[in-house]
Length: 525
Ligand SMILES: [Ca+2]
Image (cartoon, rainbow, N blue to C red):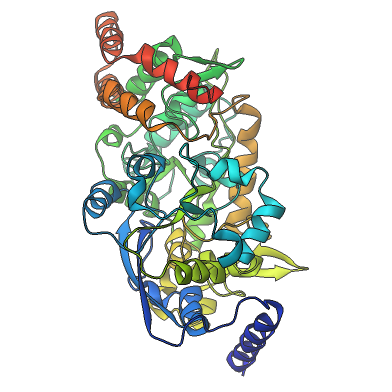
């Protein structure tokens, strides 16, 4: 009965829609039309067939446009996209191409600046209402717009990568207080190492603090921040910004201090030395297995599937090392101007635009495109899209038997829709009481006082400047990461530090900083 009611409601929604949007008639086509879309697939997405995802299925039913999906796993996209650009173009790239690919190959893409208002009336209205200066943000140096925005307009939850979590039950078992400084954390780690914190009778099977350089939310950067070093920030790179000036964070003494401290922790068995090399699967298995006292993650719910174990972990605010203040550079813009990009191979440009406009038709539709059917992982409360705490039973009731065991985790959330490339979402979901989104929001909030005053601007870099930069700074990131790994494993000496600095010079680090200064100012003259 409940199912019938929601079906009826969905039907009413569809019918009322065709009334309210006078200029667009659905279906968009009565002839069979197929559009191929290469799409960035979230690493945690457990659903193979995008056409079974709720909003996409509904879009085909209403618009009559069939999509043939080419999913490409995130983190694995560069080479595959390059191959496609070299000859095997899909009709559309969704969440896969960046500024550089477009600026370097403009003939492979369709300029759409004169088509948005006509073929995407809903999107146009949203941009006009909610995105200040959208034309400037989206227009390339050649004067064209090639993409429509995907992802959140801005989401505070996406400003940083990891937040830090500690097992409260272990603290309670050992009669320990919540640490408020890195020094206090060290005392806790010693107890986790030496005592049977989880109470299973074995005092040697705890990993006091785990991390993983191959996992975006658990890299050494998360520990460098505790020493006031912005190296590896989500919103930056190998630099800091102080009073409007880009500065060389890679040369700073606090970066060295962070690496030396990590080496000390590893030697003492307080930090998992495997963090340098272990895969993200290994890391997540350690965390999911309840072996870890302290870790950094998106939230405690990201990979812990057992709700009871998940509830043992609480967030720790940012901890500062002695003599330093925590510091990180946030990413202030999550909107992807190259979200939905039509290529020169597309024979149905208008239909492609209209299909994406249907996916973007209103606030609820944008959330459904990312988070699945209303009433499961999210719901409308007083007209506000709000995340919802849900159980495996709820998931089964909505027809998600095959992934119900992942209910409450990022795997389930990522399987609902276009996780990192939905049509632009103006405001992220409001927090559900007790839900993991709320926990993420609270955890992130505790970091906000420690953000740099300014972060990198988001203008499009001219092609020549970008090409010169890519060429001149090739190997710089590898050098920094290799030095960090070596230092965490074996420590830092004056000799190793000086050799590292010398090679930074050789790899044009000064030029790197000058480039970042120009980018910050948007000044390419
Ligand atoms: Ca134990």
